Length: 117
Image 1 (cartoon, rainbow, N blue to C red):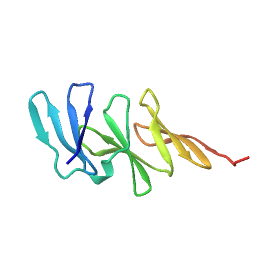
Image 2: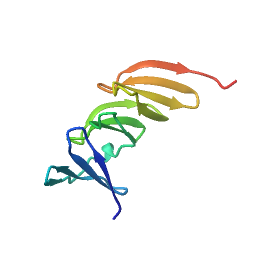
Image 3: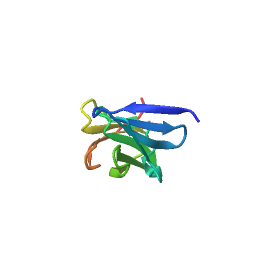
Image 4: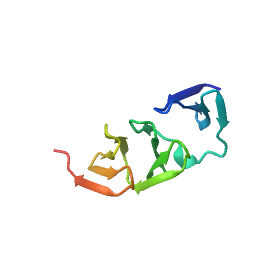
């Protein structure tokens, strides 16, 4: 099975199985298997500090902790989203909407609907 790794600022690693999400956490020489991973936390974008993961699940954008793999913030929005460089906000949208959300609590901070010229 192909694996990928993400190094977190605290020195630990998260191990991902291809199409499986996180499968293990490595802290020093200790490996902790992550079982029953929350499917809502199979993320597509990392926060700049690697403490949170953003994923689209069932029409919702879920922000998950990379330590507990539990949803810490959630909002309903379509399109693709990314963390800003500070990790405080999420921004993105689709072909006719732009929005900014709080990465801490999932509250919408700004929205703009626009039309193509």
